[in-house]
Image (cartoon, rainbow, N blue to C red):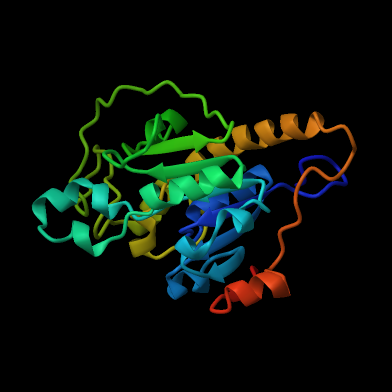
Length: 257
């Protein structure tokens, strides 16, 4: 679905895309999605255009060709489990602090998503219950370069939650660790395809990014409507040009299906 009939769709770069659960939300809203991840295994199940790359090598000039940038860095450094597992925090890299200046310098609207205690700046917090899901899963979304994400009403948590990997009927499932039944976990995360458990438990639900994407689409559409000339609303973002590929020769790409 393009932003306007007959025009190109807006484009989004999903940095740290994993198996594309966040990307699903952007695609549902009508974005053309490109995913970037240092993990080559992610490309085996990523359903959109995938680039095997260290996102820290992407500079502001390259990212500026996209209409929107989404950064979903590792959540482990900020998650509650690091307090009971010494040395775990050091095993994962912080992408938020070093990448924020790059996103700001790109001049394009951006979103940084992560968990509680992450160094997000004035984030909007979303929970599964806000989307009528029996899921207490909180994710913060920092928006920048003109993008605004409005908050939603947060229903009170009244039903007890199960411990991770030990769901019992009558409780709220905790999607972490060896969560089961996996089909129920996928449904609660808004996933309609097979995603391995290890990628599912680290992701933000697809309906959260669909909510963010809808507001990003509205922002970009308003911006496009102010243009004096009727050029297409979005930049063309296809696989890297020969010039770009020469700058990042270690990239590999796999076409989405």
